[in-house]
Amino acid sequence: MDGVKREKVNDQSHHNLRVFQTVDELNVAAAELIISIANKSIAARGRFVISLSGGQTPEKLYSLLAKSPWREQIEWIKTFIFWGDERYVQFDDKRNNARAVKSILLNRIDIPSRNIYFINVNLQPDMAAKEYEKDIKDFFKTESLRFDLVLLGLGENGHTASLFPGTKVIDEHVEGVRDVYVEEEKMFRVTMTAPLINQAHHILFLVTGTKKSEVVKQVLTSSFQPDHYPAQLIKPNDGVLQWFVDRDAATLISN
Image (cartoon, rainbow, N blue to C red):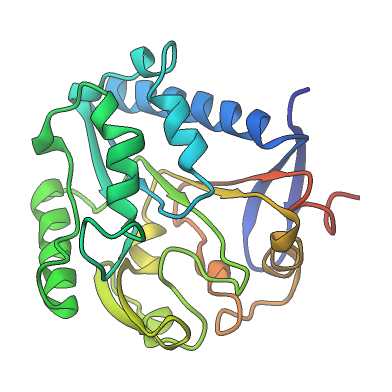
């Protein structure tokens, strides 16, 4: 069964919401969308630049893209991979976002290592953020810092990337990368700022599970409260924002 497309608009954000009956259907649709955007980006600009999300939600999607017939539909040699954020843990730590993606996807596709831009967690958090911002600026050179696609998840507390409630990074107005200390996790993270994410041509949220139903409702339908729900900061300047949500996560908004 195809995802049910529901257009919802509030004063804070224009978004396309698609509700899927199962996680598998959501992942297939997400894979198809990624392939479509990749092919159109390569046709238009000669490359596909994507920022990936960490966490468990996109892992099945990455696994899907690593298999036939999906992986053959993207020109990986013309694909460039970044991350929207990273936990400040060593690469071999199971909590490291890039480690999981490397194992599930990157090791299984024919992509040049020079096309993959990891966040350097061997540096101090502030220096890691500065270096990653430089990597992004060096990549785009004189162009706008505009990713073809940014994948995002949504935390139960309303965070996305590492834009957490109550942290100073949610007040950032500059397109860049910042370090942030997340008190509830007792951990530093490195994250793209909302202004940088909002430059993207396409932004795709992937959200699954009943535990996310309340925050999905709040982010999409409540008044603008970025201190409480930082995901509300994601409003592309001149791009397309889409939400792919499974039936469980959409329980409170799908009627």
